[in-house]
Length: 136
Image (cartoon, rainbow, N blue to C red; front, side, top):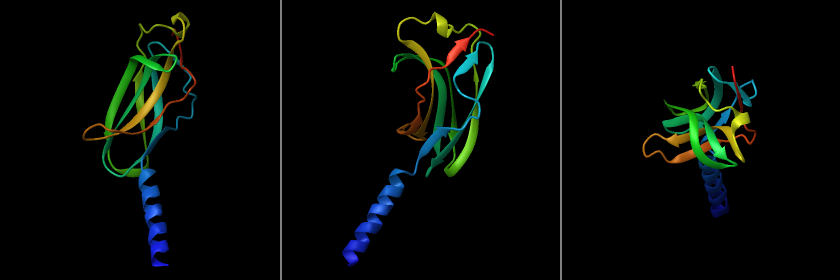
């Protein structure tokens, strides 16, 4: 009986540890459009057991293959549960409009949580809907 209880407790601890880090977008506005020369506010929530680093950006992708980034910001974060924050992404005035992208090229937003030391990936949020970049 003790082995069974120990095994169940061990499984719960491992499960809790594996799910101990997360990051997700919480912006109330849809993150699907942006105008050149404007600032897009991106709200997020994260949980991490030790200090980390959060990066947020808009990437240029060929379908889902990374090509480059349009804008990318990062910040150090402290350990915590359901901690909120925000990024202000400056959409460049000279950014290529979505309508001018060829083939499967598109813009997609992303947010990633990484370990503070070493930069190992912990969690991320990658919405499938492309961001439509339009002129201001």
